[in-house]
Length: 291
Image (cartoon, rainbow, N blue to C red; front, side, top):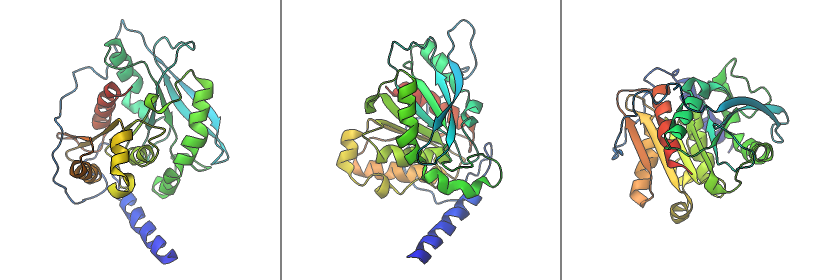
């Protein structure tokens, strides 16, 4: 058994070493193609990610919390919507980064600006976005050989469920039921979101994967009970660039869902690879569908 586990780990590590950097089209190296029916791609309007004068703006802040599973003080970046009012309750989107990032990577995708604009247009609900460090280990920096840290990403659910969510619910005025909680992420964070979101449908009603990486579990593992998933998951939404070889991970899940009649969206973003063009689009679309 030990030899089998080591072999699997070596193969998995090989996939991650092949990862391209954001902006490159290749993703994690050439992977098989799966024929699926994509959902319609509808272009985002010009300026959806540009700061606009004359509207209310939310705020960004860095927070620290004690992680019981990791045993250290960890950081997260938090977006508070415009005119955050502690006398009101807010839903929460947990937004996860990729293998080469940390709790600040999503800032390159200007989530605060995207949400400010959507909220001003009445296209998205007021919400809090929590951007944690998904590398659940004592040294959680993105320095050095980040490819060697992928096992720590698989352990992040313990930190997320056991420490981060309780911390957020104690610090901010938020709803604490699944219908007001969503999880999504890019690349490695997309795989985490699918893995953790579908495994904890009593915690997350909405699950999104943007260019999800090879850490994504097989569909049969993600969805061991088809009827339970149909009954409990409110949204399963994915996007991936047409030039990104990581499309395999998303299309594999899409094919499984289509075969079993599970509602699932997969957008094929035309002409793009593994980059923030796709991920900003993913956040823009996903944020309008949750809560």
